[in-house]
Amino acid sequence: MKNLFLITAFLSTVLMGCNNHKSSSVQDNKIGLQEVNNPIPVEFPSLDSLMISAIIYEISKDSPVIVLCHQARFNKFEYDGIAQKLNELGFNCIAIDQRSGGPIGNKINETSIRAFEEGKATDYIDAEPDIIAAINYAVARYGNPIILWGSSYSSTLALYIAAENDNVAAVVAFSPGNYLSEYKGSLLDVLYGFNKPMFVTSSKREAEGVKSLLQKVDMNENQILFEPTGEGHHGSRALWKSQPGGEEYWIAVNEFLTSIK
Image 1 (cartoon, helix red, strand yellow):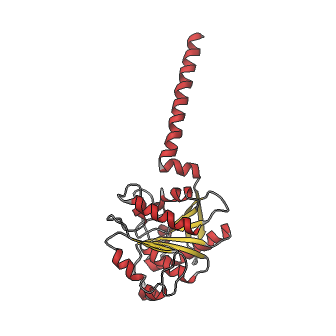
Image 2 (cartoon, one colour; image 1 turned 90 degrees about the vertical axis):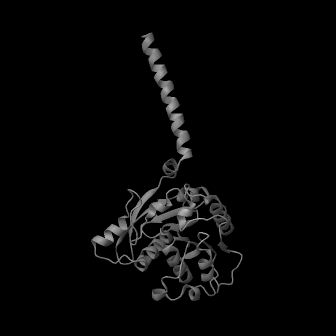
Image 3 (tube, one colour; image 1 turned 30 degrees about the horizontal axis):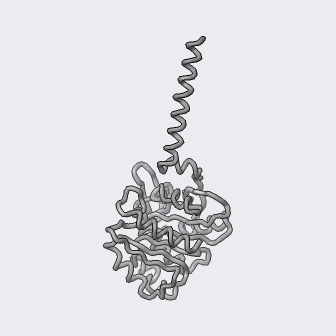
């Protein structure tokens, strides 16, 4: 009996140590942060009824909301880690799969798969109704205009949409370009007179091209064109923990979001 008691006590100590170690890990890696923030998988219809898959990272019904849109050949998991950091800064997030996208490692783009199965077009411009539907979904869920965040092609769409959609209060655009002008008109002209808060950035190599997109914008104090001092990276993945130089992007993004919160 004494030996049984000693064995039980030893196992309890070991288990307590394991649990303490697990708690520390939860705070130190993005998977743990996801568990803490309880991401919610959801689906809702696009404007043409194609079902969109998304993940909600919610901290409070009253917190401001960011709709996160991925770059080409990617999916909602471009924001794995980014969304949790934005939660820490005080923002709810909805990361979506657009129909123009693909897998990241073993993480699939559910919306693009459905679009393929249904015979729907999946070019960049075809993702616009998905983004608008996500805006509508976010506004219905939270009751307020949202911040629209795009990466590469979706940042271009985000700027077009923000210019005409009253449900978009502000826009964040990582590596936009003027390559949808044949469908939407020149982005330079669309942004003429644009006065909503916006944060626009890119890699250093892309900076001059991005700067040219804003040449007709009379920039106000809530409109930021950020050029990294380092080489940076294309799209929102510039914020990934694994990307060198990501910290300077985070500092700039934090300052912008704090100023409009």
